[in-house]
Image (cartoon, rainbow, N blue to C red):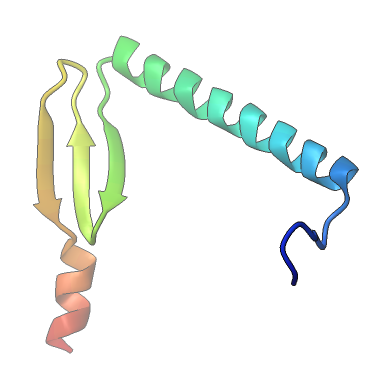
Length: 72
């Protein structure tokens, strides 16, 4: 692909960007709801499980599933 050329149309790009905005908004709302309910938000980053607690505390744990797979 040469500079300035795109394989998707402008309309497709705009629709895709709108889907990303909708998805991001839904994730933020779910995260806020979890905190209101006293639940942590849980992520996987760099092979580790990260718990973002409602009080802001961050807890990082090794991914136990990855550890089990390495033992096999």
